[in-house]
Image (cartoon, rainbow, N blue to C red):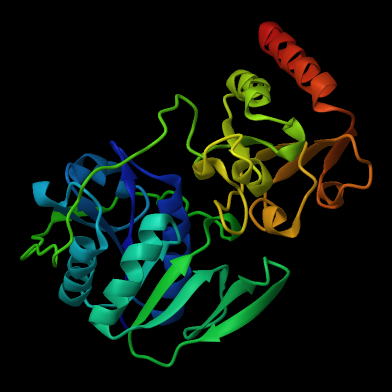
Length: 322
């Protein structure tokens, strides 16, 4: 019997929604093994999110250090391995975000742990389900090692719910911080007032049928009235219509918002793999045979030129009458 250490990403004074997915799976693993779930916050200023983390875990370990301001696998992985050892955790869990996929394999090596990547479910103490072939099939991964490392596909698991009473938060030392020769240069991000794709409740994505990048201003306008994040198909990003960090799909971001609106997207299999677990899917396409309609809850066969202005006006009217 061992504890389950969950690496949780933060944003300001709260956990990112991706962290709740990891904690949800950690609860299942702990129930199978009999240990406790421990949430781990790492970085500069992460103590601000400790109170929020205590809503979801009985024990929260905070490693707040100025030298950990920039997330790097070289510095974060040793911290995770160190805290796992100090708190009797034989399982480490994180969400399969870009950071989680970078950090957890390195921590797994340090712990001599077997690795189950991007799982979608817990089968038993040693077995985990994960999607393959663009989500069209599932396999069971079995780990035989004493220690285990797991990354979780956020779109396919239930997030953790709040506890009945808040947990406790304790501070921990990072130990020796060694960049191992790596150097942080800079972070290049697209500034936007819209929600992040991975955290948004509503996502509106445009495809190659938008014809050019200039036309994506209409998708942006719909996003703004809905308070939605903007996404795009790989065809649209490959064509240079919008930046590649907006790509939704197997090789982009995997999302599962409450509402996903696909505009001028045919529904290639790799795109469906990135959004098919959305709670409600709305498809707008002028081709009635487009594959996207096979997964859509609601479909509208028309052009985006007609549909988007009408949608914007309808949303504005609903908001005005609310």
